[in-house]
Length: 82
Image 1 (cartoon, rainbow, N blue to C red):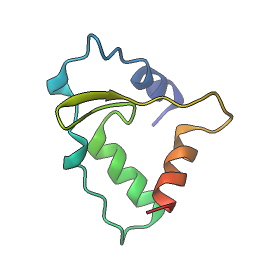
Image 2: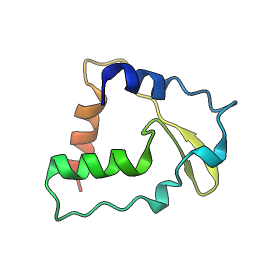
Image 3: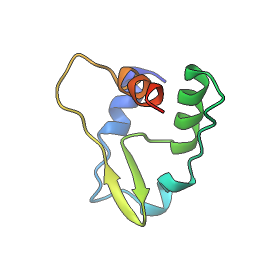
Image 4: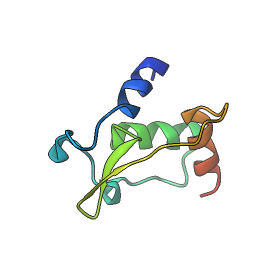
């Protein structure tokens, strides 16, 4: 995924986004037997927008504090912790 594409996903406004267009996070399944790159790829394919999704019927928007870390680095940290 390109940096520009991620920026567009991050810029989604939860006040105007269609809830039906978002993925319920509980439906995302990650196979712990997969390698790191495969887990990240699977997550991104399933969630569609890692910055905006639904959790128990509530729209959630994820943001990060300003750092030098990219979303890929943040996801790597997360999946390494599984």
